[in-house]
View 1 (cartoon, rainbow, N blue to C red):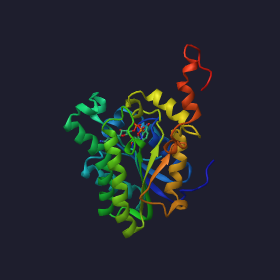
View 2 (cartoon, rainbow, N blue to C red):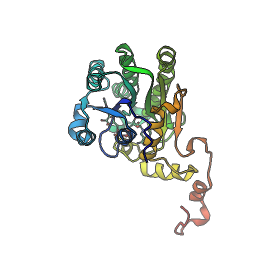
View 3 (tube, protein in one colour):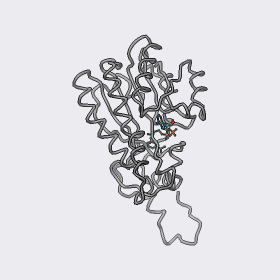
View 4 (cartoon, protein in one colour):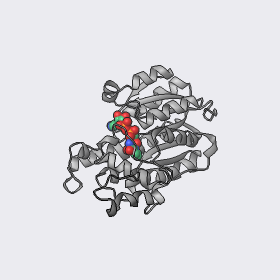
Amino acid sequence: MAYGLLKGKRGIIFGALNEQSIAWKIAERAVEEGGRITLSNTAMAIRMGTTKQLAERIGTIVIPADATSVTDLENVFKTSMEFFGGKVDFILHSIGMSPNVRKKRSYDDLDYEYLKNTLDISAISFHKVLQVARKLDAISDWGSVVAMSYIAAQRTLYGYNDMADAKAMLESIARSFGYIYGRDKKIRVNTVSQSPTRTTAGSGVKGMENLIDFTGRMSPLGNADADDCANYVVTLFSDLTKKVTMQNLFHDGGFSSMGMSLRAMTAYDRSLEGFERTDD
Ligand SMILES: NC(=O)c1ccc[n+]([C@@H]2O[C@H](COP(=O)([O-])OP(=O)(O)OC[C@H]3O[C@@H](n4cnc5c(N)ncnc54)[C@H](O)[C@@H]3O)[C@@H](O)[C@H]2O)c1
């Protein structure tokens, strides 16, 4: 169901690789809500993924950019403003990648050049997006910027590796830049901390299926999927959340406030050992 929440608004969506991508769902939902968007991803992702198909379907352009390159980002903003004939109102940063995770380097055996890349791609690129936007005065007053995060920024989760450090930095950037952008232009900056979700990036996380099972058992509302996330994020782009800024907003079915749930505890019931489990 659409509510026209983004009618008249224009935005840039970074990170839609394929139909599973969180950014893909948010892009579709933003358009459903009446928004106009441009899409951006790396040249390689555009070649390998299906971003172009999404662009054709929703009648927009895809602007190639490596989010670690200030020059590329300047081009994304300039091209988007030309396309729209004015400034943008919302931005989604849905970008993450760790070469250490890809190359299976464990957290106690990190390659430090890879670590620099992890931080540059997954966190510093968010600063670059914000700084470039501000220098080009590319976001309208009362605009909204959202980046995707994960609870490993606050709690240790097995296998999340150096992405945990990147997410902690990402959330800090949202607070630090949120102050400056809020003070000067009333632009809000938030991160959304999403449940584990089956996507290309998600599948890189060690033991993803077990993690999804565990967080599902722990969350009273169950895991939030990418469609749920899209519903939430469009409200953050809308005028209904104008005074929400510098926050890390958990979107996880309640997981972040739980210590132990009955459904998780029953998974460890020794009396059921040797029997087929009936609890789920
Ligand atoms: N999937 C999950 O479980 C989960 C949970 C919480 C948060 N997140 C976060 O959500 C965001 C989106 O991930 P996703 O799960 O939709 O996976 P995804 O693989 O669909 O999206 C990741 C995107 O990052 C892009 N990217 C990688 N390097 C880039 C670069 N140098 N410049 C520009 N773009 C680059 C990829 O091309 C891809 O489109 C990430 O920040 C991820 O950490 C994911």
